[in-house]
Length: 291
Length: 266
Image (cartoon, rainbow over the protein chains, first blue to last red):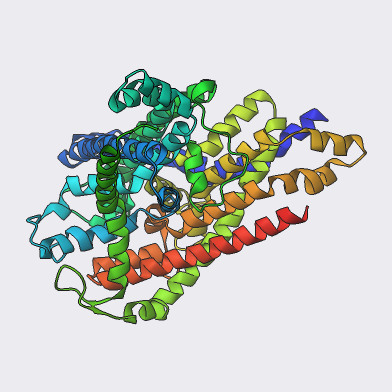
């Protein structure tokens, strides 16, 4: 009886294996095979030796690391203010941020063209920013805007677990605010920061919409390279090589994230409030991967 | 309380307002302005029009809105059914199978969407299944990309749910199918609703995999928006984006109502 129950998991698992696992295996195979089916390392040598690919790896990692650092900084700041220096409307702000989790990322890139473009708001206001839109810094800023909610939400959840008494005691013993933040608040949020930081790093490494919509010619990331090789120049083997490298990079990070996440789940004290009610805000459960 | 002096609080709020306004609010506000701008020569648009929005609900743009809604509905349904099914069945599976299935269903989160698209192109441009150039490949791509989110949402609810209810029902003689249908599924309905919400929101905005696989007769809104910006019709693109957000919001509200209504009945 018990064995029969166990087999119920097979239909959905086989379905996902067929439409997700099998294509990935074919991608790996195609990267190392000729049209005739013989093994070859030609595509690998061509792609990995090309300047374009090396530059793309550098740009992808730089953008992801810088954007993640920015998100951690901003997300922590926003969460600190909302949790510990609340103002009227703070709840509204945190709801808005929750809603942003459901937005598509290209929306930010699109509005950046109006803000920072050659005919944009800042240019008209006389700010000398010509060309900023097409730099990697603009891509980083756009990703910070989009991914900050992914950090802010779990960190805010961790902050609200800190008892107010503890802050008051620390303050009454003479600790200045900055010291309270460093020694009382941040340690509580460390697991949330680690988990959300590694998730953000993973998502920014894989980010495609923002880079595509900003359309800077000089900013080529690995996902952009997969797209160009795959559907613009129809170099399938080349695209497959880049894809394999990217998946390897993402999987390495993802295992790190799962590991951090599991430790975070185990460390009971710093655990965010269990959410018995599934969140009804549209983006709610995208962040539930972290919270 | 963290800051005891009034002036310190004011300074922190000022900093918050500036940073939050510049980084989060400004891009959203600008997009709304752009959707309604007739001409934009100064710092802000000087004349407004609803023409871009009217264009967005006509012709090709309307066609792609309908495509997007259909794609989100079908792919979302597939993903929620497969994800919930797996989430319900995983705890009963043997330990090794549980680990394999759990990783497999979480994995699409970690794989870039363009790679999912490339994989589908490679796999379904050859036998046994030739789907390249059909709308099915778009639907599959969307379902793959959201199934992980659906699975993790529902399986979190499965672990939280109190098993006592199902055990009591079974001890009173209800058959497994009846326990599933009358006890376990109704208890999970809010989570399934949340999974459907999330699937639709993600699918409506999906661009990476879609741009790899879409056939000319199945163009989703994000692809149309990209084509518009590529041709320099930035205002039309902004209006179409606003429409996409509005349509997603309506779809999400409907699903919210449906799942909450059922939850109240039980």
